[in-house]
Length: 285
Ligand code: PMP
Image 1 (cartoon, protein in one colour):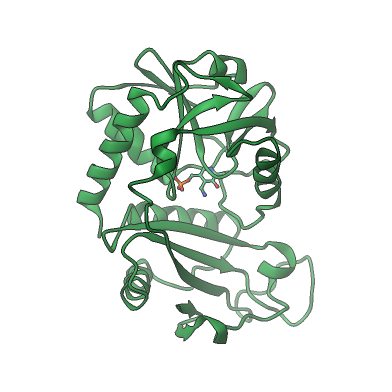
Image 2 (cartoon, rainbow, N blue to C red; image 1 turned 90 degrees about the vertical axis):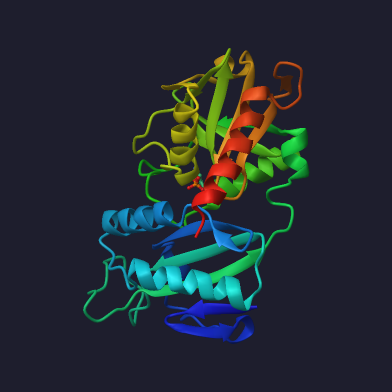
């Protein structure tokens, strides 16, 4: 694989980042994941806008223009022959000489930017999407700025491990009795034909897939309600699903061992997945 590091395309085993990089020492960095279908980028513009938002929130300087960023994405897709998969992008605050809690001067410390691709055949035609996934609920003990897409992913990682140990696929996190989001995705329930998902705030990541899916849903005259829901309400819902750049729309068929509806992917979730794949591919670049 060829990867991109600070302006250069290099073989992955020649890529180097300093041990003093604040991304490594302090999780002082942000990231984006953009999916690739048919060799094209899905929702690139949305990811570029959110990247800037995350950088601004952390007073970080963006080392690359959106135009150049698009070019790097396309070049990596081309050289690595990615038909279906993902592009991971990470920008950290860089490597000042010493470890210090105080942010280094952006005049003297350049951010570190890294991009790499991952081939994932079967992303669109996914066996998991046909079966649906099982989630467990866990407490949301993350910090209060979940709207910033930082690389501090230890708790989400632990959440996935808790799910795995419980024989499930993922975890939904709960705060003050209400579901916030999945460990790496936004969470939804369906009652009748109404799609319910938590409204945007600092409590959740503003999913790029979420924004597109809700727009497509409204365009298709589907009813959308953005409000909090409890895990008990979710267990009694007709359907549930998650969205993210790497899963698109993924049906949830079980929550804490309770089967939803008939225990198979619901009609609304399946339809939304189809709409999302079709519409986002039309706009892919
Ligand atoms: N919430 C969290 C906590 C996430 O990590 C992600 C994906 N990284 C999402 C939601 C979904 O965001 P997107 O649709 O932009 O991938």
